[in-house]
Length: 115
Image 1 (spheres, rainbow, N blue to C red):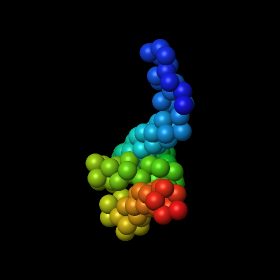
Image 2 (tube, one colour; image 1 turned 30 degrees about the vertical axis):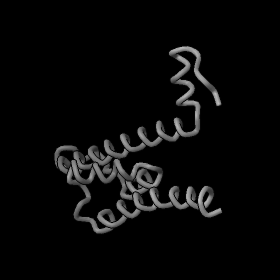
Image 3 (cartoon, rainbow, N blue to C red; image 1 turned 135 degrees about the horizontal axis):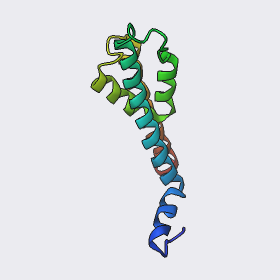
């Protein structure tokens, strides 16, 4: 384990660890997903004024959620009131979040408690 010796070394010790990289990834992907939901809502609301603007495909929204941005997608649905009438999103996004929480918990239990 690397122990930082100077103030600047702390950042590299945290980001350089696998858990630090995971935390940075989750923060970035959730922020991006939240903003993409807002961007798509803006495009949907003002489509008449911006006819040339293309919407974000639903497949892309689900992919962002599956890559770790499910919390950002859920918050984006609530804050922007976007895709809340689509059953696939009302059920799918919370299901993805549940799986993203249960799979690591199950692996932790298997490797540290059961085994």
